[in-house]
Amino acid sequence: MGMKIVKYNKLSESGYLEYINDWEFSEEIIVPMAATREDASFHELLTRWTTDETDEVYKKGFVPSTLYFLVNKKKVLGAIHFRHELNDDLLCKGGHIGYGIRPSERGNGYALKMLLLLLDIVKAKGYNNILITCDEGNIASAKTIESANGILYDKIELEGETTLRYWIHLDS
Image 1 (cartoon, rainbow, N blue to C red):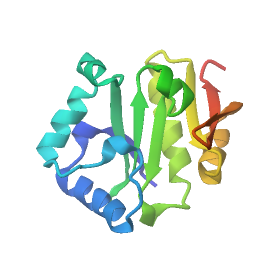
Image 2 (cartoon, one colour):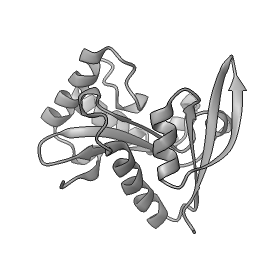
Image 3 (cartoon, one colour):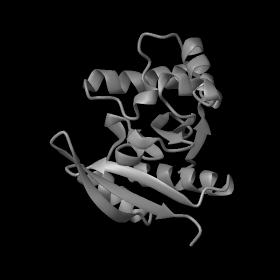
């Protein structure tokens, strides 16, 4: 299949625009949110994503993070956002990783492939335990996480929504 994940700075502008247009045309909420363009130019996005990796983001209540994209030879298939640490909010909902496959490419197993590729990267960086969450009604995401050896830790109810919290242990 020739798929790989690449860091945001290895992405072409045309590839990103085709990817994000698919999302915007669908009128769905773009996941992960970090991949949204918010009327920014591609250059502005690259600058924002670079800043997201630094301690500067603490000032806005965020944690350092890195955005990656799943690509094949033809197009960008999905995005996956790795948060380098957890704050209280991410510990409850969000976790270390958020990911999404563009609407026109779902149902092909790409989410699992992308997640497994990222887990290899973060394991090599010394991470042993990764928290991933999903809404209770998101069956596809729950199955993806479980297929990546995610172990359901608990369910948290916040503001009328139930979040499933999974831990993936990379040291086993």
